[in-house]
Amino acid sequence: MAAQGVTYAAESAMAEGGFANSEAIKIPFPPECAEVVISPVRTCGRLFGCDQSVWQVEEKLRDAGFGDQVDETVAKLNATAEEAAKQAVDM
Image 1 (cartoon, helix red, strand yellow):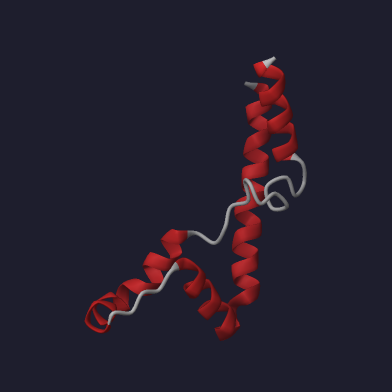
Image 2 (cartoon, helix red, strand yellow):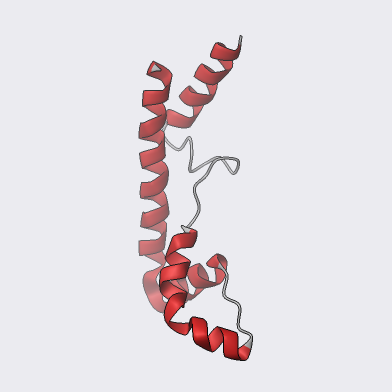
């Protein structure tokens, strides 16, 4: 019974859009990107009490005209996860 559940979950995830269209498993804009983007202003943030979260960095990138690149990054991450899920079924 557990094996059937795992197989079903993996098959659902590996379908096209399986990750991207599921709020439960969708991979968002990577938090590590926020660290790279905000690290030069970290001192400023400490001095002035600024707090930039991942969504703010994503929003700033979109405002600066990089929305397509943000979308492409998220799409590639989720497509890669779908491909990896195909290997889970074989396990």
